[in-house]
Length: 334
Ligand code: TYM
Image (cartoon, rainbow, N blue to C red; front, side):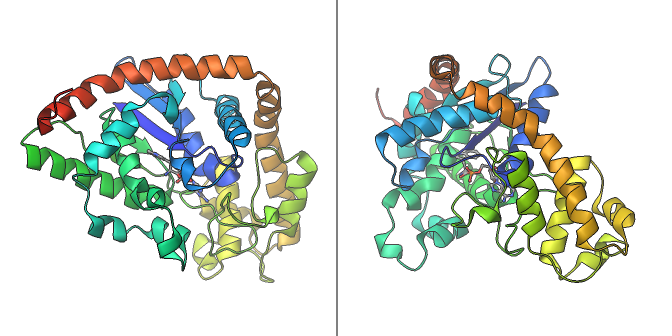
C-alpha cells in the first residue's frame, strides 16, 4: 500500500482540509504496516496558479509543513516534502501532457469554478493543473489517495491518464490509484452558506475555521454560523433541504466519532442555541492542541527546512525509477 496526498500551501489549514483530508492522512500513517509507505506533500508547484510574492510563498510552505506536523504527520514515519524540491513531478507532468486530452481538462469543474467567467484570462497553469496532480500520484505508483470530495474528479482524470499512457506505450507502468474519501466529512461547507464549500479563497473569514483561530474566535464563528429557525430533527433524514443545519450536525458527528443520526437523537427538538455551544466546545478542544503545537513549530524555520530536505531526498529516490521508465517507454533518451 502506497498512500499519497497533497495540500496547497496557500493561506492556512482550515477545518475543511482537516476533517476532509488531514485527519485521514494521520490515521492512515498511524495504521500503516511495515510494507506500506505514506507520502504527504505541499503542492507549492500547484500554488503558482495564485499570484504570491516571494517571501510570502516561502513562509506559506514552512507554515503548512508546521501545520501538518502539528496535526500529527510524523516526518520520521511519513515522507513529508514540498513539490518544488522534487523536480520529477514537473518532469513527469510534461511527459503526461502528451497523453492528457484538452477535452478531458475542459470537463474539470474545479477549473471552471476557479477560472470563473474570464476563462481567456486564466493562466495555462490553472488549466493543466490536474495533469501535474496526476503526475504527483503516478510518479510514486500511489495506491490510495486520501482527499476530500472536491478532488474526486481529478482522481478520475488521473486514472484515465494512467490507463491511456499504459495502453498507448504498451507498458504496465502506472498503477491506478483509489481515492479515499471520508463518509461523513467529505465536504465541509461554509459557515455562512451551506451550499458553498469551506475554502481558503472565500473572502469572508467568518465562513471558515482556521487552524490559527483562538478559542474565542472559534466560539464566535460557530455562534454566528448561519442556521435556520427550525429545531433539530430526530433523525438525519430531517436535515434534508437544510444545508446549514446538516453541515453543523455533520461536523459534530465527525469530531465525536458518531453518526449524524446519533447527534440528531441527542439534540432532537432543541434549537441551535443549545447545539452551537456544544459544537463550539468540541471544536475548541480538538483544535487547541494542534494550534499550540503549530504556533511553536512555525517559529523553527531551520528545523522545518531540514524536515522538507530530508523528505525530498526520500521522495526523489522513490520517484526516479518511474520517471526513468516513463522516458524510456516514450523513447526519450536521457
Ligand atoms: P487543497 O489544498 O485545496 O485541499 C487539501 C485537501 O483538503 C480537502 N478539502 C476539503 N475537504 C472537505 N471539505 C472541504 N471544504 C475541503 N476543502 C479542502 C481537499 O479535498 C484536499 O484533499 N489539488 C489538491 C492538492 C493536490 C493533491 C495532489 C491532492 C495536488 N496534488 C495529489 C492529492 C493528490 C488541492 O488543491 O487540495
